Length: 187
Image 1 (cartoon, rainbow, N blue to C red):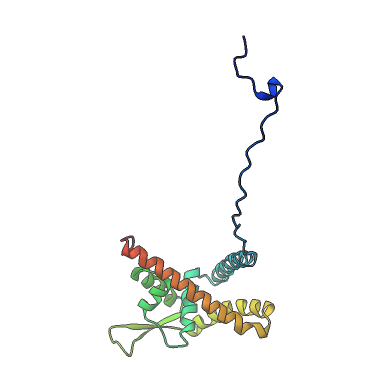
Image 2: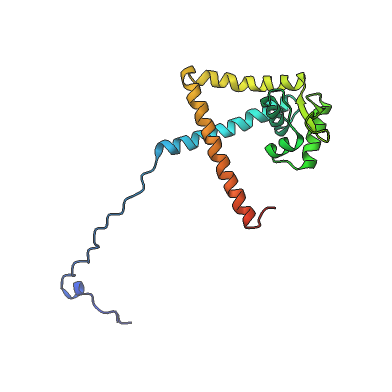
């Protein structure tokens, strides 16, 4: 069998020509924002720990996380009460799921239904002393953690940052929902 491949210049005793040189093109590399990356990682860890605390504290009180979120929502209403529709929108629950939630927490004596003085066809949901104790007990876990790690002088600034972040996330969520609605993906 004979080799029929052409002989390279080097094999014939000649030098190879120099390889062509690519032009130097300067493409700026995106500089990673390491502080932002650290912040995102810390936020994810915080979310995970929050979910664990919420689950554990709810389970200890024979509640689920949605029950507890509703109790906190009512606690934030400062005794004003909320309509089932308002609570359902906040918790993103259907009317049926909201009714089941209200029935469940009312049976446990954590909430009560009261007539709505502004609309006789409607009711307002209020915390009972038992529900307020649930909110206070679980809230104490978070209060203790914040007190432990956030200096008093930094609390107002952090609260303002949380408010701005919440507003930005809400704005983004609404924009995505609006786009999905226009595209016919959600009712």
